[in-house]
Structure formats: C-alpha cells, structure tokens
Image (cartoon, rainbow, N blue to C red):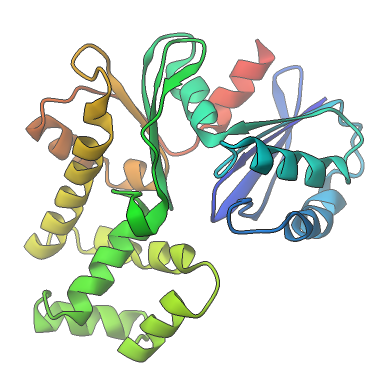
Length: 277
C-alpha cells in the first residue's frame, strides 16, 4: 500500500493506493517548504492527515510538491513526513508530477497553472529543461496568484470600468486598505490573490477581463514555453487555472502558433497509473 501526495501552495491531495486502486483520498492545506518551516509542515501532517490514515500500513510514500526542486527543501519535506509515517519517503517536484501525469513516457512540454505556474521540457524519462518560475512577485505568469494580482492592480489604479470595480470590491467585501493589508502584512498573499481570480472566470466575457487573462497567458507562453522546443512538441497543462480558463488559454496558444496537448485539472489520476506500472 502506497501513499501519493500532490501538493501545491493552496491544498495537498493525498491518496492511499493499493495495487493501482484508490483506497482513500484526503485533502489537507497546501505544503510548500519555501513558505513553511519543517515544524509547520509536520503539524499539518499530524493534525490533518494522520487521523485519516492511521488505520493503514503504508509501505512507501511518494510526495510531489511545489517548492521541492532544491535538495534542502526536499530534505525538509521528507523529514517532516518521515517523522509521522514509518515508511520510505521519496520527494519530487511538482514539475515531475506534471510530466508523469501529462506526458507518460513520451517527450513533451509540461506546464503547471494553478496558484503558481511552472514549466519544463520532459524527454520521456526526466525533466531536462526548466525556466525558473521565480514566484508570484518576479514571475509565475498566468497563475491564479498573478492573475489576481493583475486584477487588484487594475482595480486600485482605476483601469477597470467603475461598474466592474464596484462589483469586484462589493462581491469580496474589500477596500483598498484591506487589500494592502492582506498582500503586505498577512501570511500567504499568493493564496489570497489566487482566491480573487475566480472573479475573472465569472466575468470572462467582459472585454477588459478577457484581455487581462489572455495577455496573462501570452506572457506565460512567451516568457516560459517558447524557450523550449515548442515547434516540435505539444504543450500540456495541469492545474485549476489551465482547466477552467482552457478556452482563453487555447486562444493565447493559437495566437503564438503553439500546439496544445492535454489540459487536466489534477495530476493524481496519472500519478496513480504511473506508480501502478
């Protein structure tokens, strides 16, 4: 029996799997070693995960997560998990999860578009190229956090129509002071900004909103995807933003002559199949 985890900054999807079959699925808060200490990660595992899986004998843990691209962070997550689960723990980046789920054993370009964004070239066995995402302040183009950031910026700098601005602030019960406090003083501003991006999906037919999302996706493609061999390989996407905004994402790709392959919401089904094999 194995435990597979797919973790982003917002939530972690844990699946207990036996002989390729899902036994139980548990959701906890997101785990990201760039934003959390080992103690904070361990506390989330102890309080939210362990009560659900204590009844199982876990033989191996495969943890795929955002922020797990450097050895120091990999060690942090592995140690936090190993303190609570008596089994070998392997930790991989979320890019490897995307590549396994989207491409299988075929080469291609795998992209993540959720709270954050990332991309890589996968040769069918390993990730061989990666343009650094740089996080939502310096990069993460096309992500929920950056789309939310662009929305808030346009709102507070009066780039939205008065009606659209009032609708946004009223719907989320926000004021400029509250927004600035949540972004600059409270923890996890990326989660807060990503939560606001739902407004974009609900109003995507509005020309200003459509243009904001379309341009955000084109920035992601030009600054990341077009640094790989995109002319000879399909580009695949995983994540809630890619999934729910797929029409606009495909529109952006077509404008840049990029061929889109798979677009899926979550990599877990593909990860279960990968480890079953």
